[in-house]
Amino acid sequence: MTSKNINSDKVVDVVLIGAGIMSATLGVLLKELSPELSIEIFERLDVAAAESSDAWNNAGTGHSAFCELNYTPQLADGSVETVKAVAIAESFEISKQFWSFLVQNNLVGSPESFIKSIPHMSFVWGKENVDFLKKRYVKLQECELFKEMTFSDDAGQLAEWMPLVMTGRDPEEKVAATRMLLGTDVNFGALTRMMFNSLMTKPDVDMEFNQEVRKLKQKDGIWEVKIKDQETGKKRTIKAKFVFIGAGGGSLPLLEKSDIPEGKGFGGFPVSGQWLKCVNPEVIERHNAKVYGKASVGAPPMSVPHLDTRMIDGKKALLFGPYAGFSTRFLKNGSLLDLPMSIKANNIRPMIAAGLDNIPLTKYLIDQVRQSPEDRLDALREYLPAAAMEDWELETAGQRVQVIKKDAKHGGILEFGTEVVSAADGSIAALLGASPGASTAVSIMVGLMERCFKVKMKTAEWKSKLKVMIPSYGKALSSDPKLASSIRAQTTEVLHLRVTE
Image 1 (tube, one colour):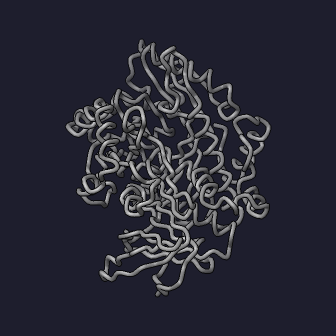
Image 2: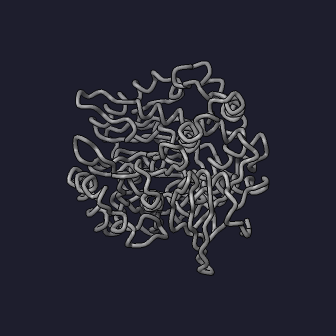
């Protein structure tokens, strides 16, 4: 991945800003669909996948809506809404199909190098929460993608599923859990770097590190991308037909610099995070699951508490959290001026309106920032009653920038998902937002191509190639049980996943 001397008069087909999972996914998709495309990738850090795609920065898990309770809110009438959970579960199945294609075509290493089987569980306590979890389970059983989920409110059964969580717990306490053995843990950092390594073997693909994009300007239908080399200070301009801004928290400032009408009115609300990382090998070995609970009132989705078994750099790790915090940085390696510099005349009203509508979130973040080590241990002991402080240490997680957008009714709203913003002519697109992010990267990038490469996406050539990469493309797995079962069986085999105990 060495820098090349690029002719400033040359117009490249695609510029990808940011070397994370989104850019890697889009780059591989486009190069497979049109091998003749020229692609330039620019990253401001000195390594790929060092921000949101890194395993320590929250993105090291397979969000498939099996266990994340914030994707299944309880409505005012007591019923449980599952639309978002079903959509995310389907998106994750699409990701697994694409990753299977990468494995089968030797575009990445062995599946074990980036994906592992790990049970996904939702765990609650208290009669009201147990009732909610049972309703959620029953509702999700209506969808084929959740048919393999099991439910139990038997303490003995739960002790077999998650012994650490049940050790030291009051035997009179009402508890319940659901379990999906098909759950996974994904190291998106490893996957991202493998995809970029594969891309770099293709003709007309170049990737450069320590390159900061400073300005974006469209002239006669072509984008002029101004870049500064952070090591030498040298500045230059690259011309591109299409630009993707996949810079995580850094996407909003670059979208603002593009000056496209579609980007007006967007703001960002940064949320930082911390993990408690287990340092006792005996404790790590006794837990083997992703166990999610219910979020506190006002908590952002990224702060849904969970006891998380992960594989990081080939070693088993156990994390609890994340604990939310606040920083004005948009990136873990960003500037404290990121938030104030992002406030413009066209987004100040939506940002103020969203702030006034989210007072509980502000209070929650203040409380989280003020937490003592003892407070964090108390939160851990709700999931691990026998937890000892000496077994855990604090680890800084990544930054998330939640999307603020204009809203006719409220003036501005805070959204906790991802948002693709693209120009009317399809020449530039930016990805804003966070969770579930990486796990649904393939669906998000296919949707982006449907916006920005409309003509090509309708051709028989691209459609047939997409169906090779994503066999279910154009069909809804959630409403086709036979297809869902068939696809899942295939990806489970190719990715070497385990569906039995």
